[in-house]
Length: 252
Image 1 (tube, one colour):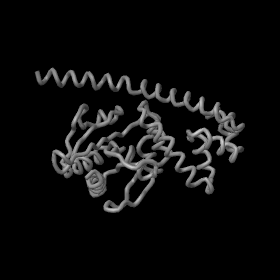
Image 2: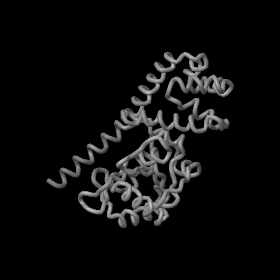
Image 3: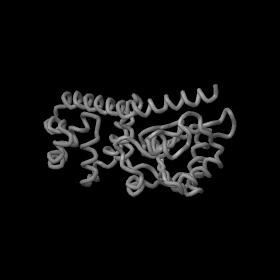
Image 4: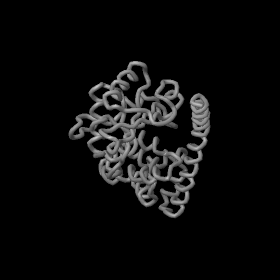
């Protein structure tokens, strides 16, 4: 059921030529870091023309907004997510979440230029956030996202470790979150690791193979990102609460 709805959403988005990038759990599935995800999350280009195409796709899906904020450009530009639901029947429904801005993530035109393209049976070409951009987007305050970040980078390192381009070396050394693998990568690519010490100081311990110390610093690193994400979302959540109160007052 869910796979059918995922394919329906992606093929409809593609048919209407919406500039959209798959992210979230479904992207993690395609990158080999997850087995299943119930929701579909998209980063979209928030231009008037693209939003018109998106609205047509949503109309074809029969998608409706299920929470605040409403589907309006101003909320997308502020960084809010718009939450929709669609499906074939009341018992066969799926969430579709749309965003155009995310914390620490580049503007959509940059994301689009470095996107990943994959072929999906029943859909055709699917445009995804690049792996580095997906990893950045997943660094949130939510408990479920951090194991996914680790798996995304681990899978990439274990798959392409013998094809270590300069770009891949930098990505692994900056993003690996399994202490043993990070120490292995640092000692395997010491010159690149030396050049990244300012960006990620824990690499000095990784170069020395101090696994326990690297593990401690990874936890500290995660805690800082979680707190930064909480601070980023605090004013946005306050806006949503005010919007809920205004809508409730109008109904009363």
